[in-house]
Length: 245
Ligand code: BTN
Image (cartoon, rainbow, N blue to C red; front, side, top):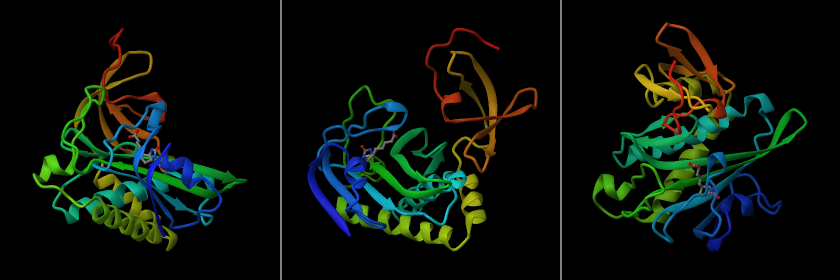
């Protein structure tokens, strides 16, 4: 069921309330404290984009397999965009990119119960009709900027939500291997040499080779050595470079 609000602090926080259950969608035209990854906020112009959260109860998955849910949601958004003729890629871990611009952000939050996952909230911010963005947002793009026409937000939301449930059913039916293959195929910058940045400011050139089932990103350096990086261990863009190696 879709619950539509005019404004909420954050759809992810609303979706965490026990009154919602698997498959419910919490959609708000505006958020007063929209949250992004790495402690950032999420800005979106009222009514121009879609900001919503899906409630999942993936009790069939072990906590160690939680990255599959990130993969499912990212793939579902790429699937939905394909319907509109948009060729998107997944920037690890789960930003949706078109070219070098970000079209959609995903914030996945899990509630664990022992060694399994009791509830997952998948929060999605997809830029639909917005054409002016604040300078603080590094490289945004919207569907309208790509396709040059306005879209009906509810229609896009319903298509994305359907795609999420389709990919989620694929996972439930034990098709994790296919999910991993599809994610690998769509990985932004895979097999191409780029600069990467470490939290201490150092940088190196390397090539993304894939992701571990845990979600860690595999990058091969110019010496041909491969290493896996966890979420906070690597950046795609420059912060403050102090040393080179
Ligand atoms: C990111 O790229 O940093 C993730 C952004 C996620 C934004 C969405 S908007 C709907 C949901 N509610 C939130 O507070 N955040 C997510």
